[in-house]
Length: 357
Image (cartoon, rainbow, N blue to C red):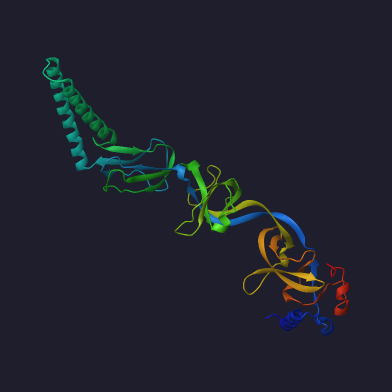
């Protein structure tokens, strides 16, 4: 409890009864410094933390075209590869090889039947409909074999990097089996990195695509300028945050680097006060103390922004009443005060040049 809590209690009772506090008779007055309450605006900045990741459009997953066994894994996670560089060799599984042989046999049989049908049709011993059916059967068998060949079912198939990339993840090891369509390697374009962070919904609603941002990595490598390129519209079920992506200059940072981002969401209006005017009550609420006829009035405020030792606040302030910047921690509602230019006598408080505010 503050030293003047008894005085504050007396002042509160006096306020309830509608009488003037008796500080003039008690002789108690706190020495303070005052500054005018100033309306103004400041850029509002949100500071949060995150890491460098590939953007969604910069990622590509290479999958197994057929069921196969992984052989000759040539790369490691985090490695940079160039376009055309071998990544993983896949050898078709026994079942895949059997499917390929069956497709070869099916095409051979279909070709034989088609040739026979054409001979019979030329001799008017077979209808056009029967010939068309055999032609379709041969075409289907050929398409099936071509597809298996293209997928690599006819022998070992080496997956190669489709572009200059960073190997983000390898989902196989040498000797492991993968099913058709399963992920083998995940790649990312080096120029497609973003700084990803998350904000609680109330903060995220203040952010817009295009907002300027400043990224400061923990490595101390410098400060980088970017812009918000994604403001999610869904709260993550894993962390309760809305995802935010900020652009990065090419080759500025490495994947996985962590750091701080400061997002400028634009100007807001309120009252500008020195940082020394801000205090916290026992409940953790921010407040300022104003001088109303040289009597203290506590006003709860929200801090909207801070810059160069000053804060932009909003709250139910008393218009025209100056703000206490020193001595404020000694004040409660109703506590008397005086400035260095005044007599300490309470009888002179009302004559202060600031007291008329």
